Length: 370
Image (tube, rainbow, N blue to C red; front, side, top):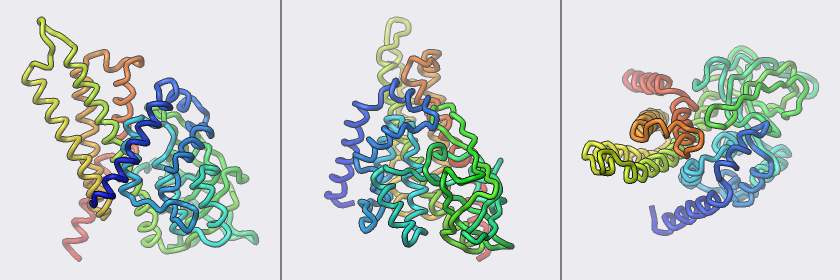
């Protein structure tokens, strides 16, 4: 990385930290979490004013054309701030799919509005009961005189509630699948919104002959590559976001053990405690280095290896920091509790360890017999 790139990314990180100091207090996070959609429009507008939503949109489409690594720098800092709003799901995954597939009037109408925050878009990623897996769609699309009508269901995905439009995959016929654009207020469309235990929201989706516009048609093998590449970008950013949250959880714990005393001295003087904290520090730094590497080399194997390591680190950080804090770490009033819930959810939000181990195994098997 050049000195100029380092300076630019440090400026990005600094801008997020300044913004978070002013606008991401526990009370403000709770207000976002309590909102019906988990994303108050005014908050999304403030994020857009910082220019962050434009990073994933090409310059020719009224965006800033940032790299995936730049987006992940943003995500890591937003993870430190425990952002409730669905930046990764909407501004990285869904926007990328729209950039890759939208054409004509739909492209000109939407990409600028996504960059400016005037509209928000989400991707219904998972099939029901298959969250974390990219599976052939059960929803079906029938051609009509005005386009297509989709019927079926999608599983719990982050960022759907409150979005102005949704992207989803549906089967057209036999092995032909389509990526479709559906207005959120389309007839026959119903969302089942849920507040997750870290305050963020996710929703399931039901459609009954809902009108839709076809963006891309392809056999499943090609459609899977398109969809998985967008989700992989989200996984990398999610891992960066998790690294940010883990950093704060660790820093909070280091400060706590300096002040907590047993037998007349701080527990930070205990060599075993020091070794445990050093182990956590090394793991978090490894995760940060790994997401940067994978952001520049986003092969399928690299992404799943990163996801597995991220899950391991998130679990180890929340378990160790909770144990070193004791009961206070679980209380609602203490800041660490929010970070523990975020880290716990990070172990499954974009697929659990088993999902990514299976993906790695399948890739290894395929490579061995290619």
